[in-house]
Length: 311
Ligand SMILES: Nc1ncnc2c1ncn2[C@@H]1O[C@H](COP(=O)(O)OP(=O)(O)OP(=O)(O)O)[C@@H](O)[C@H]1O
Ligand SMILES: [Mg+2]
Figure 1 (cartoon, rainbow, N blue to C red):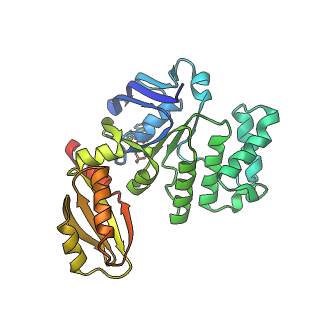
Figure 2: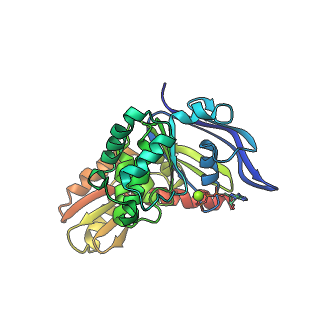
Figure 3: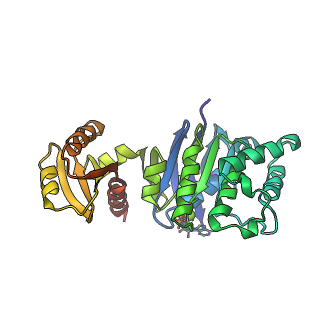
């Protein structure tokens, strides 16, 4: 059975304030789903209900078809999460910290060391396993935190803003780890649209406790930006107006603008086929082009539009 997470009418009220309102969302299969929404939208609230940290005031949260309230142990047996980044005891070594967590999470005694080795290997921290966590950088601590979610070899992983507070290298490390998780259902909240574009296949967006959209990134971008896609074309030197003018005349191109001296942002109509076609034409320009990549601006445009519509 593929891993799944399902919210059915999931609601959380604090007094008269509704933090999450009637969320219906089913995620199924091995993939990474980004969870987007402005501050206070209800992302952490949703994730906390999926991990049994708080109880819903209405509706159900289910993991692999098992409702968390009904059978917490079974539902969470195949799920691991990282919510509001926990502090690890600084006096423990990485291995000691993970040993404690493995015990806490019921990993059988004989398997603990092997699982810890595997988890530390996945986050590339093996060399550091006997060093004290207190001496680690934020990014290294976060890698240990991510390793802790892998101890039980979960099918479902819930990550609440895993790269927040990290420097660019730390962010890129966490991103690579999430990408390498494979074969699982990963549900990850983030404020970084470039990260979500890079790591996730699908996105769910919420605002004011209500789901706005759940779809693949390309469908959301196509539907809620002005349609089509956006790519960034990189040049080896400062671009003048000539290549921009020539790209503007290419079939399907809607808009061309400079993003900085050496890059052009090209908006075009259509899907992957149009992008392929555009790539061939742009590559044929011979103007010192060194890169051609999808940008997150499409998702950003869709995000801003969707969020604005609900205000
Ligand atoms: N214990 C609580 N009591 C009262 N209100 C709460 C409580 N916890 C959360 N809220 C409110 O619920 C709303 C949703 O909060 P939540 O933490 O889920 O947002 P979020 O989408 O995770 O935001 P951020 O991006 O800032 O992390 C907020 O308005 C918050 O103030
Ligand atoms: Mg939050």
